[in-house]
Image 1 (cartoon, rainbow, N blue to C red):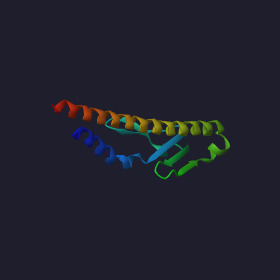
Image 2 (tube, helix red, strand yellow; image 1 turned 120 degrees about the vertical axis):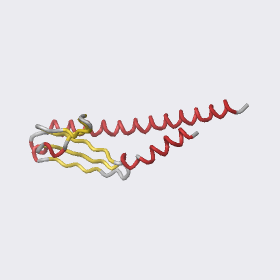
Image 3 (cartoon, helix red, strand yellow; image 1 turned 90 degrees about the horizontal axis):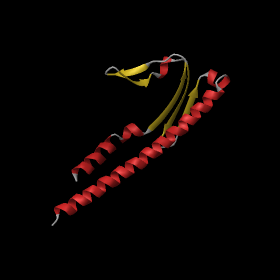
Image 4 (tube, rainbow, N blue to C red; image 1 turned 135 degrees about the horizontal axis):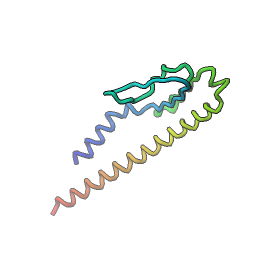
Amino acid sequence: MSDKNSFIEAALANLSNLTRLETNTLVGKYSFNEEGGVKTTIVNESTEDRMCSQINLVTGDITTAMTEKFVTDYKELREFHLTRENQGHEIVRRNIETLKEILGALDFFEKESVKAVKP
């Protein structure tokens, strides 16, 4: 069925956009990027105090950077950041499971539609 193949092709074409999980914790004033008047993502450089983790989902490499205040003054925020990072991992895991379920449903419906067409 072309719908299933189209879905798989679109998913694979966008796979390169799904190789990095980024978690940011910002303190102070910050601003958003906008697309069509809609606030989308936070401008990381819009605040001086921040902690950022980037996880390469293909290789598993993790890079974490933080300003000095996160080392000396923001222990609770470091712990909060770690919690959010772990939540990000869980979101990725659930999204993969959801994708498997979608593919399974598409496969099921494709087989059912073939059965319905054959006398």
